[in-house]
Amino acid sequence: MATTSQAPTRAAILELMNEQSVVREAYVFLDEKRLLLASELLQQLQRYQALNQELTELHASARAALAAAISHHGLDGLQVYATTRLTDAEWQRRPRNLMGVTLVDTELAFGPDTAEPVKAVYPSAAAERCRTLYRDIVQKSAELAGVSGNLYRLLAEYRVTERRSRALENIILPEIDQALREMSLHLEELELEDAIRVRLQSG
Image 1 (spheres, rainbow, N blue to C red):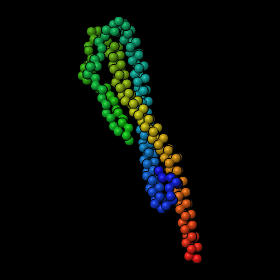
Image 2 (image 1 turned 90 degrees about the vertical axis):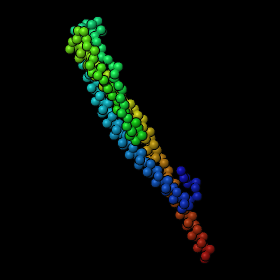
Image 3 (image 1 turned 30 degrees about the vertical axis):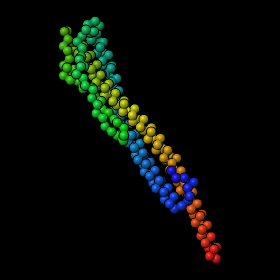
Image 4 (image 1 turned 90 degrees about the horizontal axis):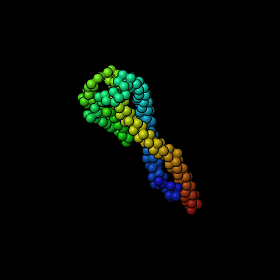
């Protein structure tokens, strides 16, 4: 960056003004990026809170269902109850880019083996409800994991962008403005001295 140690010439002032223009454009870009990141952060946070609330309710229902299933089958009976097969479950990721930040929507997709679980020898509505609720918890947790990662990456990028934006606004641009004022003043003084010198010599 140009400084006042440069000779105060018209060329130096024009160079500094060009630099000022570039820095202002960079500041505008960073400021817009910061606002976009903040907006996406709020959206992801709202989604996180909604998913977390759903998970909390699912956990409460699953605990009640588990108690009902134990009451019906007994602990030993429930331990040997046919389990849900997750061998065909597929972890799916749908990435997208926002201002250089990779956002990912995640999902645990269940195949036909999971949709049609192993039949129990002594089935009951209580145990089946317990099975369904805990499967829903696994699926919802997979979705929440993606949102949690998005929040982490967005927050990290927001902090970097905020720091750079503030540095341009509060340090770099004021320094350039000050340098321009000083160089312009020095140049005016030099031109005035030259004008006085020429007049004295011609007189």
